[in-house]
Length: 79
Length: 148
Image 1 (cartoon, each protein chain N blue to C red):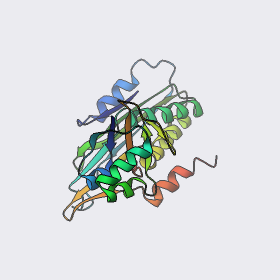
Image 2: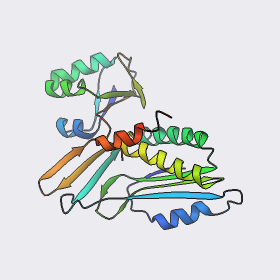
Image 3: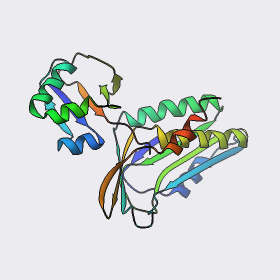
Image 4: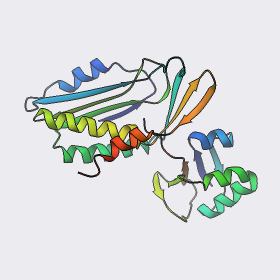
């Protein structure tokens, strides 16, 4: 059960910012989200969106354990 | 030291505290960024951070700046959440042996904070809310340090 966090415009689009989702890998997590909200899944794969697993940015696939935190980060604006 | 805070802060008090007990520091430079009203177009700013990620990224960058400019110390305070026009958004202070390093490090830190720091910024105005991305000017300001 990964804890999924959305930031910025992604959270506005989804209508949620913090949700527990059952998935053993990042690709499985994307598939679960796609089944629920295809537009959101597309936005999560969009240009400039980074993924952080337990607060470290990862590229490509990652295994998810229970209590893993996955954050989808749209392009950062600076402060 | 890095602080992210949802509460308004008083820049003068931060600067005073930062200057205390520095017998070997010859120069302290500071910068305060305020939220602009944009002639009524910006009723409020909303800044979102990722606690534990945003502060770690700022810390990594500030430590690199400390090494690059031989700083004695730095202090960064950044607001998050809702910020009203006229309120301070960011405070940066740098301490060094001499003024040039203190000025340049402060400028360097601000260019990065404005363009590359992991925040998500929303502007609330009369026409609704919109998410803001860095301007070309912000990117140019930050990239001038890359070539040196």
